Structures are given as structure tokens and as C-alpha cells.
Length: 464
Image 1 (cartoon, rainbow, N blue to C red):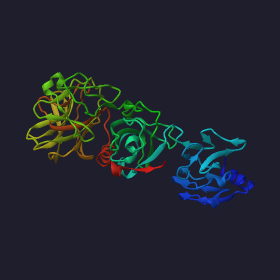
Image 2: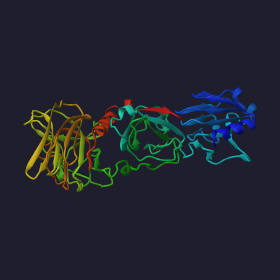
Image 3: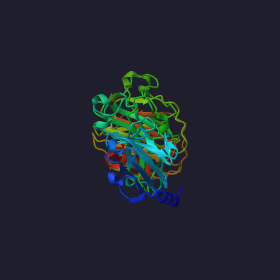
Image 4: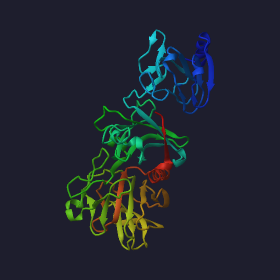
């Protein structure tokens, strides 16, 4: 339907038109009128407080702008047995009739229309989840020149009442937080892959990784958080879906290892799981509850390591990254991640006076990229090394520290260690990732922006 057709219908029924460009609370005097929203950003109409004496009265709402328009009932009311109608379709309209106090039904020629879709409008909550919040990611924190595809976004909310379980005064019905999902659309139809990091329903803590198909640089990215669904009692996660095919391994290192095979789990579909101490119990790291994201592994500086990963099947390009915290800044070499006979990311406390070091091996020759950037003890750092076939780059906390251009060919089809039995980390390692592409400087900085300061990376707005 075009704007002319809407105007023609309004004219035939002698509707009075009210044009709005901002959020608007409808008044009782607006009944029997047509309110048209013309805005390029999301706006909300709120229906008036109506008693039974207004039964049979109507209101028509149309949208002609490019932004989403939502219609909310008065507190405690309903629309078509749900809590909100939403449309992001320009030139769509809906007509509501009051059937009881603050109870509205959708009117269509021939009677009341009970389907989920009303000429471009949809019932929010039609997916079984009763509450929705909009998450807006600040494009100013996305540092690449181009949009980022399949970005693993960290959603972290602490001490939020709405994220407590219902028994603790919140809105979450499942004790594991399974009735919390993410969608790309406000109607809740297109679910996004997510992996829960941690949930505490007593205090309202929730952390999750969410795959954003397109994280925009030129404008803010919006996704939606749906929650409160009493019919959900099993996980709605798709852990492997969060980490696309470019990820060859993602180790959150949350486990408490004891030398059992495959005990340190890879969250990707590759199942490149690792074994504490390579099977030697005395060389297993210790689980720490003081990790950067949740738990981490505490390495003793003597021989603690994780090994016996399945073959990562790497290509000639790569990105290896980790979050690290030294308990003491050593005078010795301490490895973070080693891809055997190919590349390692470490702290070189000996030859380089405590610099970060990313080395690439080719045959018997090693090419070291060392950064003149000191590491302090008891401080978390995000360290990244990339190799694109011609250039190796080293990053700390999202910033490029240096680049080298060795003319080498490396064998990437080899094993992996976290820490090392001989050059062992003395401190904590968390969230180790391995990719078969060289992530851009903008990607690495965007990750750091998200993971180091979630409160400034995105905002959360109650929609329902």
C-alpha cells in the first residue's frame, strides 16, 4: 500500500490525521483519529489509559518513515493478546478497537483479525518470549574501515534485576538462563547464535558470546534480547555457530583439568580439545576463578601446560590471540601460545628485557618480532599475533606494536600448546583463539573495545 492509498482510505472514512516524528503518548482525545509516524529512527506510540466506557472506540496508526514504529498499551494492558505491535515496513497501517479496559484488538474488514501479521505489523512476543530489550552497538567503537562479518560480540550485564530468576524478583524463568536469546529483528523471528559464558540468577549476572552477522561501521548495529519464556527448559545456544569456519580453535579455559584427554574444550565445530599437562597430572594448570571473562588457567612457571590438541589444520595465514596476566614479570622467556614448529606468542624476559615476542619459524631459522613495550605484573593484556603470508604483526590491547616482512614459507599443519613445559607461563591465560586468516588491525581493536569496556561499547534499552 502506498502513502496515497493510505491517505485515500483515511479521507473516505473521514479520519483526522495527526503527523508525528517523535515518541508519542496517545490521548483519549486522539481516539477515532489516524496517527502517522514519519521518522527515520525507532519510535514508540503508547496507547491511552482507557476504561470500559470507551469500548468500541478505535484508532488507526500508520508508518511512512524508514524507522521502526512500536505500539505499546497502557501499563497492564494488551494488544491482540500480546504486549506490543511493531512495524518496520513503510506505508503500513493498523487499526485497533477497544474491547475492554486497556484491551485492544486488531480490526480488519470482515471482523477481528487474529493472525500474527497485520498488514506489515507483527505482535512482539509472538515467539513465546514476553520481554524484549534493544541492544545498540556504538559504531564509533567499530574501528575497521569496512563492516565486520561474523563478529563474536561479548554481551555482559551484571547486577541487573531483570536478569534475575523470577524467584529472586527478576524475569528469567529458567535457572540456567536458557530463556534468554538474541535476535537480529525486533519481532524476534531471526535468532542469533550465542554461547553462554556464565549465568547467575540470584544476582542478575549474564555473559554471552553472540555472533553478529554484520557489525556496521557507518551506523549503529541493533540486535534484540528476548527473555522470559516459561516453556523453555533446555539450552537455546548454538555454541559452534558463534565461531565461524575461520576459527580453528577457541578455548575459553573455564575447566578444572586433571590430565584427562580432551578436557579443555574447543568451542568451534573442529573439536580441537586439549589435555592438561599433556596427560601428566603434575603439569596441569590450576583453574582460577579470577579470569578475565570468567574462569582462567593459572600456570606455575615451572612446567604447567596444555597440549595434545587435535591437528588445527591451519592455512598459511593465521591469527593467534590470548588474554594474559603475569603474577610476576619474569627475567626468563614465558610462552603464551605455541603452534609447534611454526609460530609462538610469548613474553621474552631474557634477550629482550621483558618485551612481547611473536616468532615465526621456517626450517631452522626463526624470525622474531619484538615490541619495545613493557609488561607489568598483575595486569591483564590482550595480545595478538597475525601472519598473512608476507607480514607478521604484533598487537597489544588492540594497538599495533610493529610489523616485519620475512620472506619465508611456514608449515602450518602442526600441533599446539598453551604455555609450554619448558618456557612456562607464570600467571593466568584466558580466552585463547586461533584463526586461519590474518585479522585486520580494525578487527583486533574492535575486539579490545568490546571486551575491555562493554558498558561503552553498547547500550541496552527496554522495549517491552
